[in-house]
Image 1 (cartoon, rainbow, N blue to C red):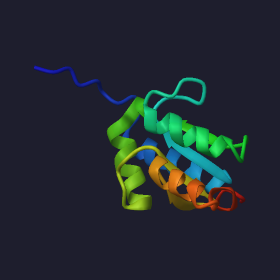
Image 2 (spheres, rainbow, N blue to C red):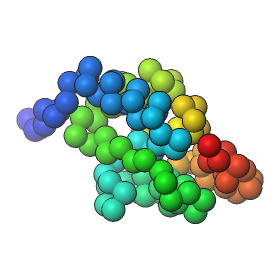
Image 3 (cartoon, helix red, strand yellow):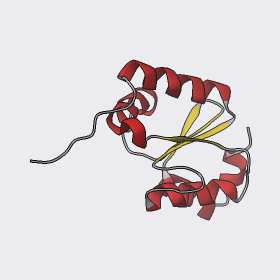
Amino acid sequence: MGFEPEADLSAEEVSERVDAAIEENDVVLFMKGTELMPQCGFSRRALGLINQYRDDVETVNTLDALDEYRAALEDHSGWETIPQTYVDGEFIGGSDILAELDEQGDLEDELQA
């Protein structure tokens, strides 16, 4: 018998937060944990890649309602995995996509809002 914590936020609240974060910020990273304390390697990697080129990224900690954030983000991107990066309202990708863009020399341009 496992313990499943209840989400702190309803699906509707999360959906509204996701919509607002994407609309109101040039660059937003939905991640597990916070900017000061990422809680997974993929989130840490994505944040590090973005911070090479921008220091004004908005981060959203998805851990307080992980399943709800996955569902809300999937509505925007078609992906339920986290982290997810959006620039000017457009889904860019997760840490692997950011790393590929960086290797190709395209990440800096992608992050210019």
